[in-house]
Length: 298
Image (spheres, rainbow, N blue to C red):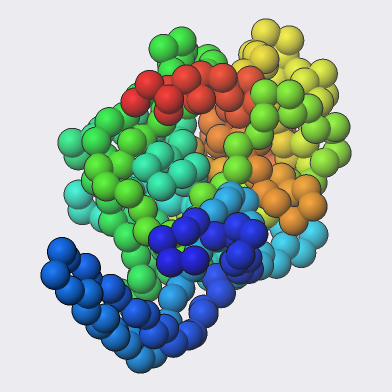
């Protein structure tokens, strides 16, 4: 068991299980002339094992209905463990992002992240607290989609490679990525999170969440016109809920059988946080092949 990679045929732990046990091992030393038996006793210790995987928060989110991020609902602390805050050197939060594995974060290209000047904060909930177990990571590389268009926000995605790996905990773990074949029906309820505006001027202290329905491309084009919505975009909202400025780069996640997947990255919408007009997100399923290629080659 020691040195193995659970879960396997011998050991299978649930996520965030603490295992306490004793070990007594016999060590044998052999030479040409003699054999000596040593007894090494390890008396008592605990092993904290974080099961590999994605999209399963150790702290379960509680999402009640279609509440707004504009006039939003506080999330349960730690329940969206892939949510990151992108900050400048002064601690100013300017965009969100999503942890997708121990080295990589997905955010929006229009956030214009600088590897030199910006940092990634993980495990944050209360932006005024000094007691949260945060992980602060510098950025080794910021890789923007080669066909990102700053005029119409097409292919609005940047991948951030962290300078050192994230430590997975109950409050920090990755989200799954929507597959290239993911095609969720209109009306599917998903969730977006962030510290964006909760009104025309206010920025929240606590991480906000809102549930909101997906729209079909045809429905979205009824709001935004035929030419503005591309295959690299997905829309959600227009039901009295919305994401808003400051949530840019953050996640739009959808749940299936208890597993959450990143379906969209907050991209653009109305300048006044209009909850009757859908917000637009970078479509992860469309961008998945580029994501996979980028991670594999870097």
